Image (cartoon, rainbow, N blue to C red; front, side, top):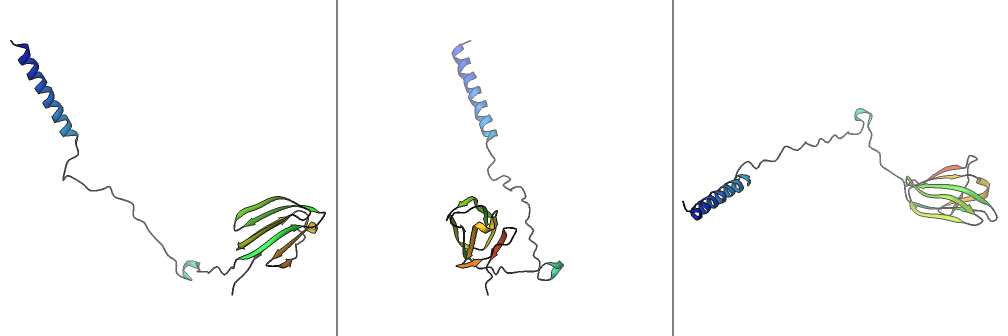
Length: 139
């Protein structure tokens, strides 16, 4: 038996097996191309007055405000503007924190007599507990 002929036949069989393996592993053309189902999105809307829901419009207008420590005085201040902590720290002797284009401000002042608050240039009285909320309503 000629070993050369046996080697060529064995190589041909091996090549044939590899080709069959590769073809079998390839995705089928024109086969099932459907995608798995996707969840459907449900949107529910409530009309005014339905189920106690009401549609309200935000009538707040942007404003400018500042918190300033009086000369020779100091106070701890926490300022939250539009639900974000904008400043938290100590204001001393003339230090000022100013903000523009704010819809809502929540201010906490530890020593209310040591600070002044202005909104659109108007002095705002600070309550005894040192906590105040500023808003400006539009027409």
